[in-house]
Image 1 (cartoon, rainbow, N blue to C red):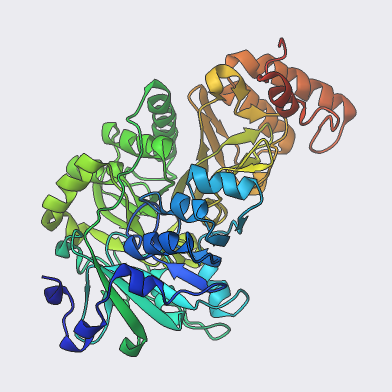
Image 2: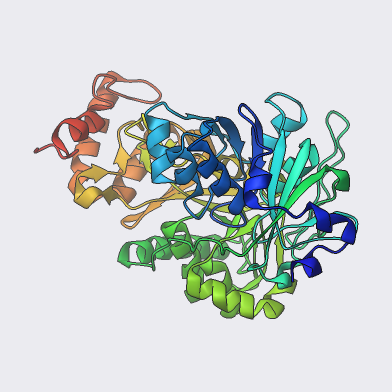
Length: 498
């Protein structure tokens, strides 16, 4: 069966075992692997590499598009294969190794990795390992459920290992739009002028002589771990819908809005799902990850088109989508992440960008990555690409965590990923703060009044009042700014009465 997916006999003798393919990877190499948010990752070769490391220790730098599924990051970390990891991860095992200092993690905006590779600012890719639906007669690689950085990895690598995954449906062929920007400083404008724009190839074009090995696999992507909407996430979605409705009434938007972008995870998915019960229609998406809510919106006839870099779904939704791919395919594009996340395109299309915060402070600075200011969670991902360049930058989070012992709104964030200059709207289940056109003192009053949980609102107001007594454009009590984080570390709660 795999020969039907490898469409020229010249490639048939390159089919080898995962172990033989993994033997091409040597200590100290830089490896680029496909995979973007648990979708379309190479699956067999990294597992064989981890197994080999038990008797033949080695260290590599691993670059991907984003996080990997099938516990691959954990398996590679546990096998002590990873010396350096770029640019995003979401695995608890790898996270522990990063925070212990065993793995050097380079947390990057997702649009930047291949730009630095292309200009030789970071070490070159030795071998790319790419999951594919098929290989064309000319050696073009047809990706599976993600593109991510796969195209540039394959183009820039010295050698390529292709994993032909027979469990990935061949109905995915034709979904991809592989466009690689020309080199600076003579780069031409990227010709994406709407989410529907098709400007590239339906496969990754490479020199076929670079394909060093082909491995046949049959392992599915990991299912997403999103939870269904709850009262808090429904409230957040409701606040956003009310706000956007008001923008329509003021003539700033129409009921078709502008193209939507949403980050990954339960809250962002729930917020997007909330658009089903709104008057908005004929919506379009230009985003990174297409989650369950994307297809729920298609089914509700609210969404007309979606452009992304990967499709990451729950198991039942994946089974439904693949079975019905014929009805979705003409409404979808998967692109390289440097195009899905490119500032030029984001600014041109005027996106409404919805991303998730770990915490934000009374002036609107956002921490997306570091727990307590020191411990990496997942990474900045694409949120910075969209927040700085979109038409409207929205950040959402629940107002409290850990049963109320953590306030997600604090006097000063313990780590800054997105400054107040890149943030327009913040929303919790308690309310929405529109920060556009507000000075810092006005921002603080608006955030405290609208977004803070009632159990922390008075303490935040007291902090702000006393800080104003000190003066300044952005008033702070420097000696107290992180006292809430210190209290949680010491006492297990940010509450003032603990």
